[in-house]
Length: 184
Image (tube, rainbow, N blue to C red; front, side, top):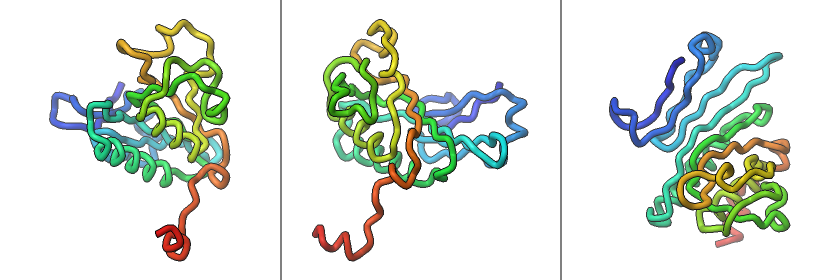
């Protein structure tokens, strides 16, 4: 097994990464990209000139100020926008978010088996998922609550989000200078 890591120092703390089979390393056509100690991407070739892009992520917890959390989500949003539309997209990580269980409002991004009440990180996560056509997959299955979340609170810590729609229908619109002036 090989560990691909993005973080501080040799102790491998404060970071994210991937563990992959050593024999897969030689099939990689691109190097993993360490965006920050909270974000890392890995693009793996599939068949017929197709790829899967994996994003490993670790979101700031609620005690961090809004500016720090907003900066993280801006980096994640920028990273998602750089993923080619034809790639399979899988986002894995610890989002430190409570997304609640309101699948009537958020049915396009979550299943019927969410847990708890939504918090501010949950709003950020669900909005991001909605903008990019991602789905919170651990809300699809009816499991015991202790198997849906980790830690002491119902946070979405281990999450797999997959892109369900084409980029054309799921990417946030890019504003031209004319449009952005209209909103000032």
